[in-house]
Image (tube, rainbow, N blue to C red):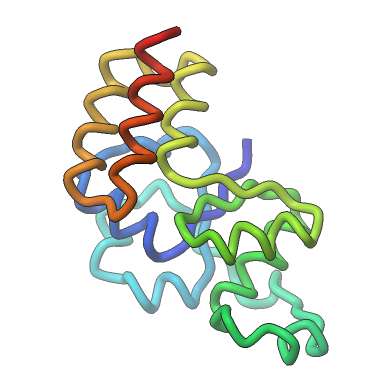
Length: 151
């Protein structure tokens, strides 16, 4: 599983002090590294991709006023290199899926890793409770906790 993470996810992982993505082939871009360098240093298992690997169609860049250049780089890279983009930005997830790639938010990634048996039920629930303290959409995290508890 190839995961591509944006800056917000890097921040959440830093706050959770979690090695959640260790062993998942996680990567990010140089632009994200510049934005969150202080946190990425502690996430040594996240590969920083070279800018050569990212090619953006200029006409799509011009037509999207709601996403940053970094966001668009992530969306195009996910589509071109078959990554699952992990982001909590709804507009970025929509853009990524419109380009034919998969995108998922952090609480769904935690659920997914639990269902794939990469995280125990207790580990997943603990991470979600930690995330809930930091997260803007607490209701979404609570729903993820409920889904795991019902399983």
